[in-house]
Length: 251
Image (cartoon, rainbow, N blue to C red; front, side):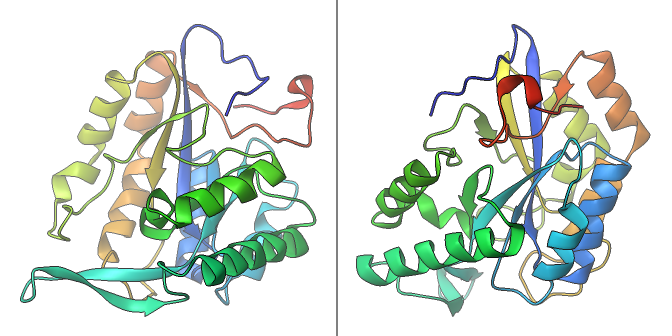
């Protein structure tokens, strides 16, 4: 998806926190990581009890974009079965009708809560990358006029700032300040989106819990923010489709 916003010839970076609204600890983590760190955006889960708190904090927030984190289920890796098993499923991912209805419902719920549409769309555990979810999400995003992570977006997505392997094994060194600074130093020209999952406390049941606290410490580490400044990286939110390019707020 092309954007009318001019990103210049340098390096621009959106640091997007996933799972906003899932718990109080996640909400606090996102708020702190934006206020004291480098987070410029978040993707919100509209089906969780803490979503109202998230909306209240984000309302009118300058230099911060709010997208939709579609929640169709969560899976964990079972090392005994050598496969991913469901923690919960909102709808079967192979049922296009149910997926379509749920995607539209979550988009409508976002608009109801926030008062306008999201600035971008992605999904919990990247389920929007598989069919038939992918096609359904792209159709909904086209209706709303917003980008979709890794599929139709002006930003190249980077998920390397993550404290587990593909099978859920701990990789603590990947979320230390040195690792994030290294990612910043190797940032390509153009617009990039970094995914992250900060939280102030591990107050939710998920396979990715304690790592969130370390992520918050790294995202707010003064050395990380100093590195972004030293490297001339332009930290910014997703453009708001409701605003003209001259009205976009960046940091």
